[in-house]
Length: 241
Image (cartoon, rainbow, N blue to C red; front, top):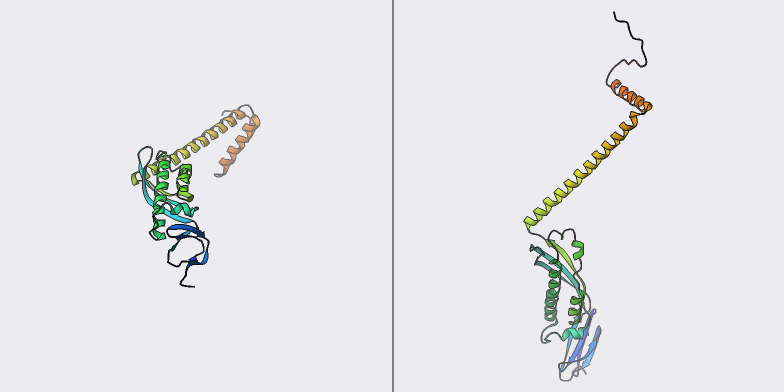
C-alpha cells in the first residue's frame, strides 16, 4: 500500500493545500495524511495560520513643510484566506519564498500609507502629536490586503528620527518654552503678593487696631536683634533747661 500512497504532514499552526495535477484538491488542517498517489501527481503546500511580525526600519519621508526625517514601523499580519493568498503567486517555488514576496508587498503597501500619514504634518507638530501616528491602518490598506487574503492586525510607528540640526532647534524651542512658563509663574506670584500688600495697607489706613499690631510686630523684630529699651505710652513734656 505504501507504493500507492504518499504521506503528508501538516504541522500545528499551519494549513495544508493539497494539489493534484496542479489543481487544488482540498485544504488540510494539522495532522498526518496518507494520500492515494499512484503516479506521484500530488503536491502539498503549507502556510502559517499564526500572526507574523514585520519590522521595517530606516524609511525616509518628507513632512508637509519639506523636512526630511527617518522612521521605522512594525506590522503584524496573518493569512486569513490561504486559497486567495496562493492565487497571487507562482507556485513552482518553496513556501518560504512565497512568504518573502508577500511580505515585500505588505511592506510597500504599509510604507505608502505611513508616508502619506506623516507627510500631512508639519515637522514642528510631530513631537507633540506623535500619538496620532500610532496606527497606519486605513480602509484602503485593509481592502488592498484583503485581495491578497491577508489581514493587517497592526501597523504602527516604532520610532521617528529628525536630522540633528532640527533636533537642536526643537531642544532650544523647548528650553525657551519652559523658561517662559517659569517667568510667567514668577510674574503671577509677584502680582498676587503686591495685590495682597496693597489690600493690607488699605485696611490699615482706617483701622487703629491693625496699626497697633503692626507697631508691636515692628518692636518685636527690633528687640530680637539686641538689647533695647522701649517707652510706650504718653509722657509729660520735659521742661527745657
